[in-house]
Structure formats: structure tokens, C-alpha cells
Length: 482
Image (cartoon, rainbow, N blue to C red; front, side):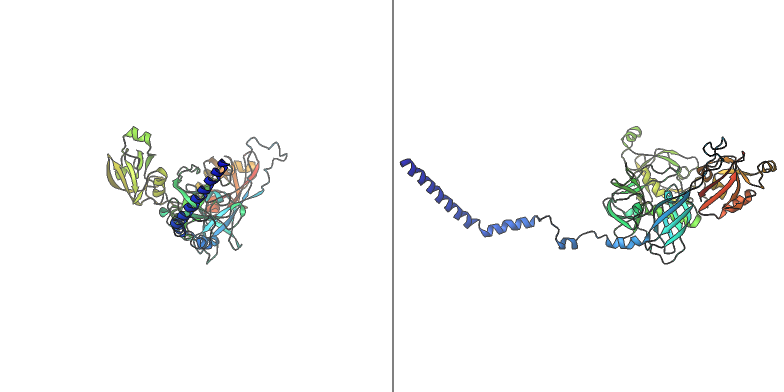
């Protein structure tokens, strides 16, 4: 009984102490103090994760204006091809009883393009229109035009088209040099034939070399982004949030053939120079310094005793080239072209690629630890400063030609023709034509000799149909684009 009373008394005492403690805490840390704690939480900007309307209104990036400025100036490019007959040097095709070339079947492909002037000049990729027999352009309002290929440049993967129309919407060039890593961009194009598609991303890197272009004089200095780009986007626009053209989408890094995280665009400053050349001269005017170069890494630093990683190392000079004539030496480190810093081979190639033969450029180098400035006069690939206009038609075909003699005409029962006596790299080889083939007509017009051949191709643009005969009497025809 005593123990029970003792336990009850203890519980009563504890209860009283709890009451007094609660009263004390409330009086000292009551509503006023709770308000202070809430204020501290507000100062730390701690909020629920839902998005109130006011936050949307204050969003830092708004792509609607850029999309509206550009989507109407990006076109759908369709290309049409004809299967090319192949010559069997052993004579008749064993699978073709009559020995005739296979029937040509039309094929189609598609990409994108960007209108850059209100009178119908359109930029796209070279690989979009290469060897096409016909190029068709569809605007955002579904109007369709047949486009003329003004010129192409495999070294940068660019091409220029022209349609006959006025007062078209177009995208103004921006300055790709001002583009920053981390900056928001839009990709506008026609992936998977889905017209007028806009995707957003950021600039992941600049001056990226991905070794995708086969041309000997290639310039790869791509803008890398994570904006979604897929097959069909090639030739489309990469724009900043002001709607200015800062790149032409060209490639993706993918193991599947579809977008997996990174895409690549040709910088607009390089695009502008190439397109200006194609408009003015019909071909791109490339200026060369005349050096072999290496990127600087730890191995080269140890090997050559360099002081740092800045710049591009001059590993050799072309005899009589711009660099040698201008005073550069092997072992120099190029750090600037004009006012632009260069720290990699792609950056140097991009900057030099903006100039023509005969242009003078300022180059800053480090020599024995000291900065020196030089003025170089760029050369063309022939080693001089001439502007070389559009290639001669026969040179473009890639071969040497001779008129068919009387004996061959009699044997084959032809009135005339031009024999491909030697085959070089060019359109004929790509089409599958073999040496010895005799061209008898182009686009159904008879070819009696080399003068006729040159005349037929002099102003030709688009698809070409060549018909002829081989020395064994096998007739064949080939189609390709010029």
C-alpha cells in the first residue's frame, strides 16, 4: 500500500513539473519565436516544389520569339536520285539474259535548309544534295519549288540552293564567335519528315573535330550541342534565343543512327564566308597558311620543351608557302589569328578558313618564350594568290577525253562520240563509268566530239543523263547530279 502511494505521488510530481516546463517554454518561445523561425526559413528560399504561375512569368529564357522568327525560314529539302547502271568489264551480266543494264529506279532522301535571303537563297548540307538528280524545296506554308544547286563545298559540308521566289522569310546571321559554352540554343528542322520541328539545348562545346568529312581539305570546327537532332535535321538551323543563325546542323554522335545526346553544327561565321564565295565565284576560295601543325599536349611539351599548352605548334612549313614567306619558323606556337585566340587545330582551321587567297592575316606566335606578330598573305591550293572560279566542266567530270576515231565509229555503228581515255576522281567514277566508255549523248542531245561535251555541261545544273557504249558493244546509261 505504501509503495503504491509512493509511485502515485512520483507521477503527480512529474506531471506538475511537465506543466510548469510547458508554461515556461510557451512564455519564452511562443508565437513570437515561431514567427522568427518561419522568417529564417523564408530567407533561405525554401519552397514547395510545385511551379506557381508567377515563376513561369519570370522564367529567364523564352524561346517562343526565336521559334516564331525562324520556323518559317527553315525548309524541307527533298532529293531525287536514279539508280546508275554499272558496266560489267567481262561482258554480259549473267543474271541479265539480254545483256542490258539494270533499269533505273528513282530514290528519294530528305533533309532541311535555311533561307538566308528574301529572294530565295537557301543553305543546306553538301551531303543532303550530293549527286542528286533533282532537288525540291517545300516551305513552311507547303509551297513546293524545284531548286537549283548553285554550288557545293565538301570541305565544310555546305551547299547553296536557289529557288525563284521573292519576299521570303529568312534568318539573319549571328556571330558564332560570341557563342558561349552553356548558352541556350534552338535546333530547327525536319527530323523524320516531321516538318517545322523545334528543339532546345545548350552549347556543350566549341571547335569540335569529329572526323566525319572525307575531303582532303576539310574544316571541322563544329559547335556541339545537346539539342535533339535526328535524321532529316541535316541542313537545318541552329539559332540563339534572339533567333539569329549561329550554325547549320550537320551531324550527330550516335550508335543507333538517332539522337543519343550530342549534335554538331557548322559555325555561322564559316557558313557566311563559304556561301558568299559560292554566290560570287561558284566555288569556295580557300586560303592556306602552308604549315603542318600539332595540338599541344604533355608529350609535345616534354619533347619540345614548351612552356605551356596555349596555342598550336608549327611542326613544318611548305616551301614557298604563306608562312615561310611571312617569316614563321618550325617550332613557333601560333596563339592568335587576328584578335581571336586559337588553342587547337580546329580553331586555327576555322579562323584561316574565313579568308581567301591573297588576303593578309595577322598571326601572333610564341617563339622562344616571346610573343611576336607576323602578317601572312594566304595562298590557294595551287600555291599562288589567284581567285579560282568554278571548275571547268570536263575537270569536274574527272577524266581525260578524246574524240572517237573512224575505225571505232564504224565498228560500233555510231556517228560520233567522246571516249573516256583515262578516269580520275570525279563525277564519272562516282557514277560507275569505266575507262573506255564512249559518250554518245547527254540529256538526249548527240555528242559528236569534245566541243559538244564541254558545251553541254558548261551551264548545266542538277541531273545529267549520259548515254553511250563500251568497246565491246554494250550500251549503258548513267545519271548523276552536277
